[in-house]
Image (cartoon, rainbow, N blue to C red; front, side):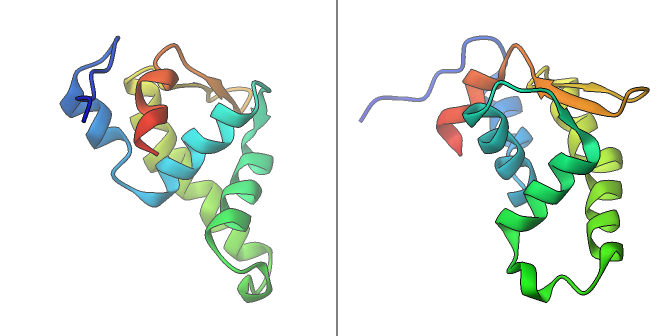
Length: 105
């Protein structure tokens, strides 16, 4: 078995960055598509992948997902340059180290 060796960030930082399901889903989405996402669209995509959409009661659930991404997950991923998060424009795209954590998801 080959040992995991990230190129641009420490192994501990890479594992810590993807400890939550939301962060793993974010990395998965951005790894599949090189597009820049508006925060609202990314939150909707993450919510869709994580839960049965029929259980999403209303827009409040999507808004809560958006808030969680904005305040918890995206800053953590941005700190390690896994994603690029423009808080002013509220857009998210791949960071330089996304390929370092992609094998972990």
